[in-house]
Image (tube, rainbow, N blue to C red; front, side, top):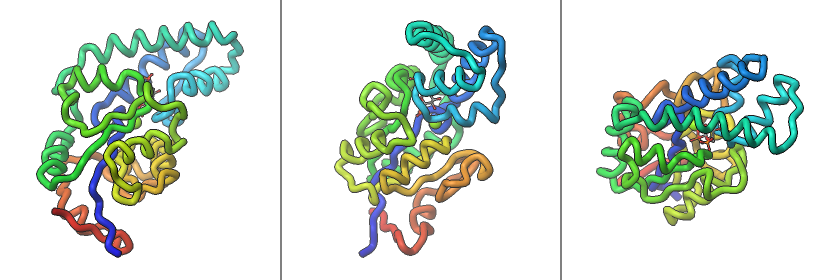
Length: 227
Ligand code: B16
Ligand code: MG
């Protein structure tokens, strides 16, 4: 039976807005204070995973051992720097192609949910004026397991009242695409094929993206109908 795609599940950082760059800046500043450094290649491992999982990876990389309360204090400090950056954001920071994609999703009568690991997601949506745009929001405040666990996308599909096979995930992180697959969903990777070899579809951005054609051209085993 033909499977209809009825909903999009969007990651936030690196897909809707480029806060991935802000996370990197703040983590880099923290590691420099601790006496070591991270580069963009290492930073790929941090994309999509929770704040506490990120700091655990960073400290392991820098071979730094600290108590739980010291780790929490460092994560809080990083978050304060990060929040300073996101508080400067406006609708201008929405990544190119995203507003047009949202318009197309709504015009085709599809649903959309946010599936982000970030506890700051509501604050970011408010800043960029997209707090009313999503039919459902699942973020770091409502999930207990970090990507690559599928929880965030499973919950998103449930909140949209859709089956996993009726959803497409949009992600910029390897761990996020793993999460989509574990949830039984196809994933569009935004970025480079070398960073996201596990993506079902890959594109640098949504600039010029035609949703109707994309849905029609998806593989035959998942043939799509739009309203
Ligand atoms: P916060 P996403 C993720 O958001 C980021 O990619 C990841 O780098 C970050 O550590 C995580 O959110 C937690 O963010 O510190 O704001 O709670 O890509 O899943 O939208
Ligand atoms: Mg992301």
